[in-house]
Amino acid sequence: MQEASRIVVDRFQLTDLCLFTEARYTRHPSMADLHSAFQDHPMALEHFPSGSLVSPPRFRRDRP
Amino acid sequence: MNRSVERHRNVLDFALSSLLRRKGKNVSLWVVYTLIVSLIAAIVFYTHALKREAALILQGAPDIVVQKMVAGRHDLVPVGYVEKIAAIRGVRSVRPRLWGYYYDAATGANYTLMASDDPLPGPGAADIGSGVARTLHLTEGDFLPIRATDGTPTLFQVRKVLPYASELASSDLILLSEGDLRALFDFPRGFATDLAVTVGNPAERPTIAAKIAGQFPDSRPILNSEILRTYDSIFDWRGGMMVVMLGVAVLAFVIFAWDKATGLSAEERREIGILKSVGWETGDVLLLKFWEGAAISLAAFLCGTILAYIQVFFLSASLFEPALKGWSVLYPRFKLVPDVDPYQLAVLFFLTVVPYTVATIIPSWRAATVDPDAAMRS
Image (cartoon, rainbow over all chains, first blue to last red):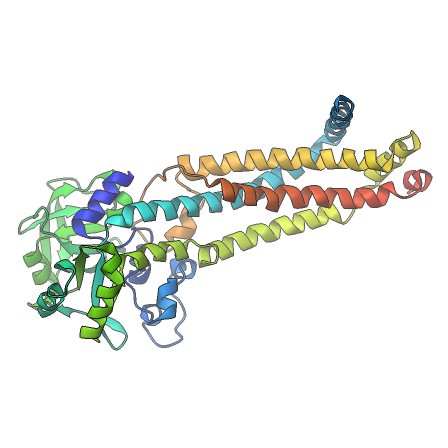
């Protein structure tokens, strides 16, 4: 299974695992920007259950 | 030496028969203990296996992804950046990536649409991930309806369903030709979603990323190592999922061990009093209680770990599925490659077996140090 996934990632230059498809910032956490979870307004409450499971990556917290 | 082993063997024998005398209570204790260990072990196994899987699968991800930022959000990148980035020393190639998301109102699922040139699906054709095929009940040759930006429904013939084995990377993927994707989303010519940069020497990636950021201040380069670190931090013990689930499980265990540590039943006190009155030393009573605690906790640890292993690696962590799935309609089906870290197993052992065994000794020590007559009368 790993080999097949690795081939697909390499061929289509994919960046993320397909684990949470409900929001774009949980579908591609490494590509998301810091503000995407608060897209409606600043301090907006998180809409999606997986958003509370997936914290922003550390390198995103260090720099915008 | 033999005498000491023999003593332990006799005490263990007595401990097991003593546990069997209170069968109902001890079996229920063992069941609760096993479930808690199994939950903690399943989280540890699942996150470790996913981290390992991510590290192996995403090795082939682009060396650097260059995004353009406008007011804190990504924007389309002008394809004019390609030539300038390709001219930086050390850059082997720059490939514009054209991709986006599509919400299917009929099923409520989100898909990732991507332009592919390897191999080219051709106009009007699409390659789809297994998750898309499952959600829409499509097979090769069927037609996939997608509503364009102007509202007109467009049909794409499914040329190929991507292999089930690659579901962890491609479950929600729909691959179209560049022309079709541009027409669907009305993508302006001369722009791409982001740029995938290939660098010859991996050691030069941070330097090249700094050069790109310097040359294009509105861009954000994301290194391959940062992509890999993302999954490390998501499934880190400090990540949201781990903190919530581990916190609940550990708290349950603390309440459980606390309940055990705060006191013995009257029957157990009487038993200790009788043992002392027939000549058992305090040390013998403590040894007996140690073996009782060790027998229950070791059995619970072994059974809990085996249950967690079966749940995560054979049943695809179906217990966690509702939590991970959230509101998403499309959820990938994948089997993780079994991989257990001995270090984590040792930590789990010392976090569960040792505190419980110690917790059972303390109240017994209190009971064993009082007068046997008083202990029997209490």
